[in-house]
Length: 321
Image 1: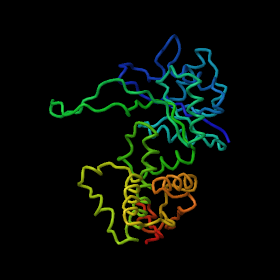
Image 2 (image 1 turned 180 degrees about the vertical axis):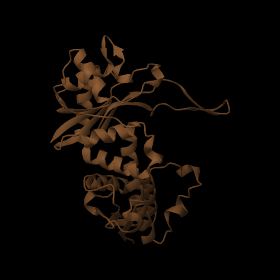
Image 3 (image 1 turned 60 degrees about the vertical axis):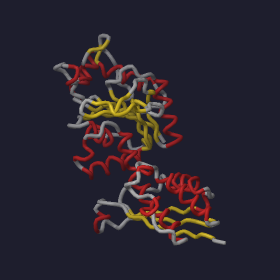
Image 4 (image 1 turned 90 degrees about the vertical axis):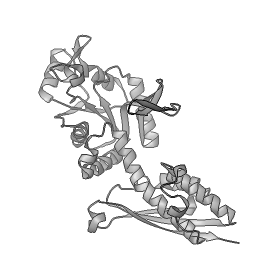
């Protein structure tokens, strides 16, 4: 197992008002991108680096500054959008890299210790990003009128590096590519991976919730958590499962087990199945051994086979007094 980094240097730098690409703007007498490259090379957790951008100018500027690229395993051209550039970098990764850290060259002051911490957390949890707490006061408004002050206690400014299990990152980019223009403007990879997780998890959790409600003939999710009820707007599906468990408690019911299956071409759930079982068990207050999660595909047949959607079904065994 190894960790590789993708250093994104393809930004046009329009906000800087410069004629040269942002990565080549001079900072402290050397190309901007060279500072981030130096930090990545100095981090022991990073074993290989793919540099994405205008290859010839980047290599020439690095050589002119007398700087080395000992850990760089590949140089590849960038794409029109950030997402396209990351996709190019993924293709150029070493075959044995199972964890990928993505960093924007514009964040030139990154320190090796920060990179190492993000990589270590991603190695433990599957994904991690650098972030800063939000200090500014935020206002929500429209037509020039302030409507509310937004609580900032749980708000963070996403930074880079962002590190992910390679299989998650590849699945997220494949899914985004399938959505075309709807996902082309993604500004960071964490958003793509988050979308991947919500996409499969919500369908699965809703199926489990309906199965539990159905076991006691209590209706379905739409009946108890209608979409036009503000109390449940943007509520986590795990929270809804917790509410359903409370309903079952009110009827003296005991959950024996839950067996659920997801049908999807992407994402591949094998690497996340145990995490999902744990999360479901915690939401329902049952042991992980009482939760079964399976995944299959439709063998590329029909709408599901074209990756146009996801299906899930579940069976729940419940004891009642």
